[in-house]
Length: 357
Image (cartoon, rainbow, N blue to C red; front, side):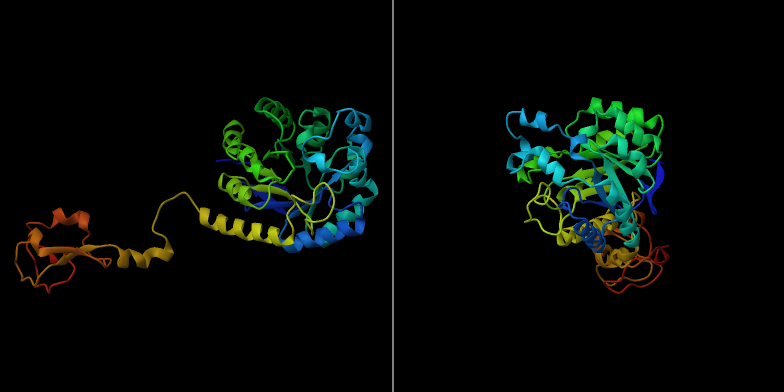
């Protein structure tokens, strides 16, 4: 069993803990601190455990020249009306917001953390956050990842658009200095297409569990709804990250595929039901079904009136429900064939070992 155990804020994270849900605001604040504040409280009301932002300045994450010279917009960026640089500029979380966002999350009783995409801002951010999230795009930017790891806070590592060799290299490197790792399966297509479900490959979580038995499993997901979440939790994921907005019809790069307060609550409720249903690994008669053992099982009953000292033969027996706790069960029939009765029997009475000589 995975023995890794750590806290994100006040929440314990281990292989037995309940699923921890992170609402990623991402670009859905639309450049408005008041809106960001409102989304924090909405996510809390919907059942999220944590809020995650993405700290960056546009110039520290994208090259305006580079994207303009790619030739055309690719993947989910095809629908963006502004340039790539302009979209990222609008989505910036200024460093000056950090203290206020942290204070707001504390008031809302939520954990606050970030994906830092500016290596030079991390020292200023570190005192305010409970954990770090490594975005999939930085899986080969080891310098920024290892700087996060050195702070000795939990590391959530998304693995979209990467192969197993890249994942293995990074995780093994992080583990040398920080073992508080959540390894998250992820697919980085943000188009909200139903086709994306065929590319999620939740079974990768099984591979992660075998390769890294001491990490916590997670899912960073961008599909519509919560189908993938239920699958991931069934496969052992303990941390779930989904984007969060209040309105999927707003303009912006992340609104369309985000969860909203209604769908988030539904996701939480169905997950909590699933957690109850998954239960333990020991097969036994449960408390709520003990009475059904009586009403649904069959037992050996007298097929006619019988008298004391009759030698029991098969034709004297019928196998019918119910089966009281002291009844002889069908698979035990050979134990009483050829034996004598101690008492008279009325047709329909169930056989008990105390009735047999």
